[in-house]
Image 1 (spheres, helix red, strand yellow):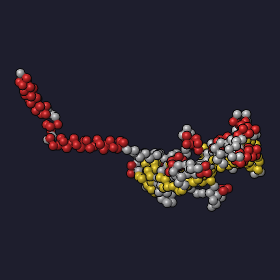
Image 2 (cartoon, one colour; image 1 turned 90 degrees about the horizontal axis):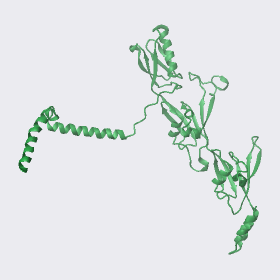
Image 3 (cartoon, rainbow, N blue to C red; image 1 turned 180 degrees about the vertical axis):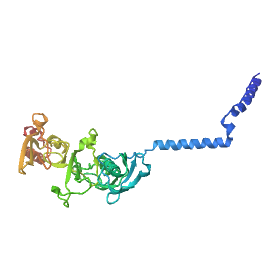
Image 4 (cartoon, rainbow, N blue to C red; image 1 turned 135 degrees about the vertical axis):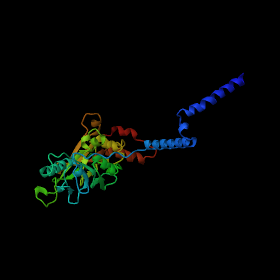
Length: 358
């Protein structure tokens, strides 16, 4: 009975399989070798798609910022609604012009795409078209040069294609330096930009043509820029900009500290923080008196005296340090004398005497 049942099942399957394959199935339309080839091809396509999905794709090009100024070698696309025969892509010449059908050369250097739209519409509307609707877009951006200097890893001149932001240019320059107290970036970044007229005709100081171009300097809070919570600080960079990251100023901590030397003055560095960066006070010889020697606004040397213990106990405000401040943690001559005396006495100790030091 077992063998008979098993044979019956096989017989039913033998009858059903040809029917299934013949009812519009894949084998009914393609030979077996084509089916295998197609399956292998689909498998390979799936693997390739998987690799592409896992690979970082290049970012899409940024649209032109509203204040982008067209320059030589830019490629513009000019479209006029309903006038397909006038639509075309044109390259800006070295003289800052594009040549359009009917109207001829049009000066566009130093203008935004929106300004060019209005100018082209006026050119066509004056003699050829009634109320032309013009759209101008930048298809290729000219090479633009920006200098990045100061406390960055790779200062130099950088060619950029298309719009770039301040953070992107800092990244191109390798980021900020952070190697040692004397090579750290400060708290701000300067963007120095030449003041030019819309036609790129530079004027000298006082507005006289032919002189050196005047410039404006934008001072941007570097900490807020890097924090990313002030997007308005991440300004678009223009051709000819100079991005300068000043090195942090230095203060010098001397006297009764464990590691005397320079510390970077940034992030509103205070006296107690500077002493901590210098390794803290040396309890063997240091006192609580601290002198800060600096120059006042008129350039005269002044000395500010305070006590570190009162600052740490919040009895006095912590003093912000300035560039080139000299901080002297006073040492006790009595402690120094006891230290020398201790060294002269083999096996002797005078540690208890330090309690009397001021």
